Image 1: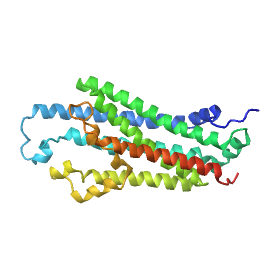
Image 2 (image 1 turned 180 degrees about the horizontal axis):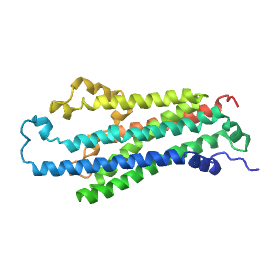
Image 3 (image 1 turned 90 degrees about the vertical axis):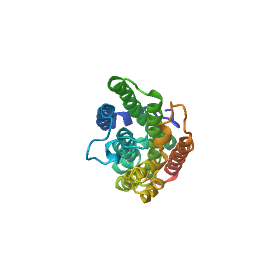
Image 4 (image 1 turned 135 degrees about the horizontal axis):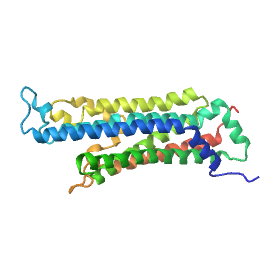
Length: 285
C-alpha cells in the first residue's frame, strides 16, 4: 500500500465533513452581521445627507463627527476590527484545536497514524484546510457585502471592500497559525484551547480598547489617547483599517503593506513550527 507523505485527500475530506455544521453556522452569523452593518450604514448616510446641520441638543462630535469623520466610518471600523472578527476567531480557534490536539485527545490520531500516512501528510493536510476554509468563508461574506452595497447604496466600492477583506484574511491566517502551533504543542485539547483561545480573546479585547485610542476618535473627543497602547499589543493592531480604506482612492496609503507582511510571516512561522513540533514529539497513542 502506498504511503502518503505530503497530502491526504481522505483526511482533508474528513476535516470538511466533521466541521461542516460549525462552518455553516459561523458563516450564516457572519453574513447576517455584514448585512446588518450595511443596512445601518445606508440608513446613516441617508440621514446625514438629509440633515445639513447637527441636531439641536446633540454634541457636535456625536451629531455629525466633524473633522472628516462620521458615524459610518466608526461603524465600519467596529465591524472589521471587532464585530466581524468575533465569529471568525471563534471558528479558527475551534478548528485548529480539533485538528491535532483534539484528535490526539480523543484517540482518533492513533487510527490516522496506523494507516500508511506520515505525520508530514497529517500536518500539511491540516494546514491546507486551515488556509482554504477561512478563504472560502471570507470570500462568501465579501461577495455578499459587495452585492448588498450595490443594492442599498448603489456603489459597491469594490476595491476598498476587497482590500479590507483581504486584510481580514491575512489576520485570520496569523491567528490560525498561532492556534495550530498550540494544537501541535499540547496533547490535551483543553490545554490547546486555553492557549489558542486565550490569545484570541486577548487580541479581541485589546483591539476593542485600542479602538478608543485611535487618533480619529481622540481628536473628536470620544477617545482616550492612552488606550492606543493596546493597538501595539495585539495582532489586530497590524490590521490597518485606515490605510486599507484608501485602496481604490486617488491617494493610497501603503502603510498596510508591511503590517500585512508581518501577519503573513507570523502565520508561516507558526505553521512551520507546529508541523516540525508534531513530527518530532512523542504522542500518547
